[in-house]
Length: 173
Image (cartoon, rainbow, N blue to C red; front, side, top):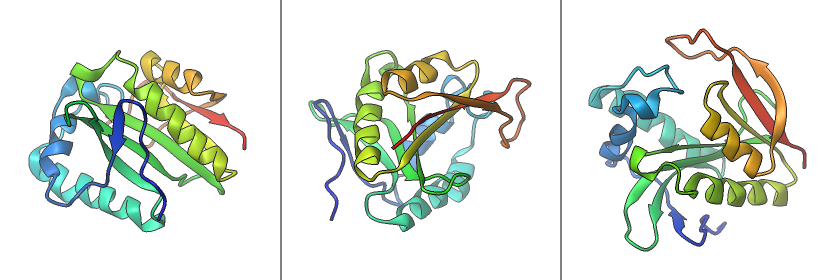
């Protein structure tokens, strides 16, 4: 079994089906969702019926892949989640991503774990990709700090649509 991702301050684990409340903490915050669904929040039932099944399915690609809840090692506080899974649009690529609770923004956690995910992807000899809305400067900065480079602008397929494009960053194997 592949070792779970662990950094100096963060431990990633696997979500359990009953942890819907952890996802709801993120998906019900309009500031967290600002650059994901242009601020549209989800109800608890939507998180339970749509988000949690998506997360559980993320583990079907192999034990090293998935969307993982992140915890501070020092306090065991849940801070959000990180994604490491095969890219849906690009063959032989892995997508990294993150969603953090507001109180954990700006503390370097996203960059710390993104760098660890990039290292894992490079060890698998995979193209590494990450995406964000073009206005999400904080996430773009995390991508850059993790070593990814701008690849393209594109229009996302989520609802409701934004009037601004998304960007994709990548790092070749």
